[in-house]
Structure formats: structure tokens, C-alpha cells
Image (tube, rainbow, N blue to C red):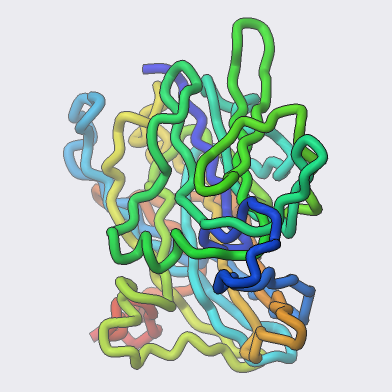
Length: 354
């Protein structure tokens, strides 16, 4: 296999497909107005991995595109709200690898990986194309491209009901997509705009108003030994939403021990670094991330949205101790203590060994 490096791009501001083009002259349409985002107070959480257990089954099993040894992992992360604000923990991420390093949002992923193309979409209040200003559109899903750079279909894994909830609505603003492609010895970026409900190549002909950031700090993992596991504490489908009773609010100064666990299963993307070798070396790096926002009404006057969301990240180098077929990092438990898991499978408490 090729030595593939995995890039994890954290979306700091999550907004679903809002915007794109047609001059705002149709007063008879029901058009959702553009929402201007303004920066409000934030509550960056402190995070620290305090316990990790990697358990390996069949460590000598050959690695193929679809299979390999079984690696189960269990991580406990100490999460603290050090701010003066009551804040909500919306999500957590965890990753472990031989080496993890941060990149910048301006670094094209195509330069960091063996990609032939990459792309991403966003929104802005308006755009000029050939002297015409566009600032209203019927929204559509973002595009996909075939190997020749031709649009093949819209980019969406949503159900039909979700599609019509988030798209196919008249809205003020523009919706754009930038597609970067390796072409022989050069790398070129093409810009597409949703004009009248269709993606149009406007490369070299467009000036887009100041855009909203879709992707912030990124991280590159070499010698990956976990999935980039995430846990959502808000929204449908999360463990916390089963009975809507899990408390994801953190008071000022409050700390909790949260759990993220899983199994390594996507072997096709590992490259030529054996994850078992990485674990058995006894030295790994972990990346933990937490997204939080201040508990306040985010909607201001004059169609403004007060941005209080913030993501913090911590890269740690950990030394693992072998115990049978498990490799453990422990900075929190004494010999006569153990973890007791809550009924949601989200949080642990330190209790005496029974």
C-alpha cells in the first residue's frame, strides 16, 4: 500500500448549503434574508487525555484492504470549562497515530496528500459575475466531479425529506464551490457559482464578497491507529438524545471525564505503517478536540447571528504500558480505583475497585 497521510479538517462553523445567485429583484418571492455573523463571547474548553486503553486481538493477522488485527480503543478525556460563562459541549473528537501535526486552513490538502483533486463549498452575501451582481438563489446541494473534472451529481447524502429541509429554498446570498485539480505539472483551482439553480463555471469571471470560513485548523495523521472518532452531544442520532436527559451544559469551572471509544476498521486508508507496530512501540500521539458554545440566544437584531462557537484542540505524546494484550496510558486511576460508566455511555466516574 502507499504511505497515505490522513487529513482531518474540522469544520468550525456548521451551516448547511445557504446561498447563491440571481439578482434580488423578485419581490414576490419568499426569500430567506441573509444572516450576518458577528463575533460574540466564547468559552474555550480545556481538554486532556488522561486514560487510553488499546486492546489488540490477533496482532499477527495480515493487513489487507478490508481486514487486519482487531484494535479496540477506549479513551477518557478530562473536559473543563474555565470560562465565566455557562457553556454547552456540542461535540468531541479523538484520534491517535504515530504522529499528528497541525496544518493551516490555507494549506491546500491537495499539496499534503496524494490527491488528484479536492474541493469545498461556502456562502457569501453576494458575487459579481461579468458585471452582474447576484445575491439570491434557489439553493441546491454542492456538486461532485468525475475523474475528468466534469460535474456528475450534487453532493449530498441527505434523505429526500432532509434535502427539501435544507435545500431548494429561495435565499439571499450566494453559494459557491471551489474545485482544485492537479493537471500534469500544475495545480489549478476552478470556481463554480449556483446561478438559477445550476452550478456554473465562473473561473476568472467572479468576485465574491467576503466569504464565511468553512474550515479552520486542520490536522495531519501519519501511522493512524484509530478512526477519527467523534461523539455528538446535541442533535438526533447521538447517545445523549435517546431520552433527551443528558446534561451537556458546563457551569463555569466544571470538569467531567468523558469517554470516546471505538474500533479500527477502515484498513484501506492506513498506508504501509502497521498500526500494531505503532502501538507496540509504546509511544503514540493523540488529538482531542472539543466544540462548545456559550449558553445565550445567538440571534441578534437586523438578521444577525452571534457566533459563540469555538473549538479547542490538544495534541499529546503518550507512553503506553503493556498489560497482556492491552496497551495503556493512565494518568488518573490509582491501583484501587476504576471507572464507572454512566447510563448514556458518555461519561465516567472514578470509584473504588469492587
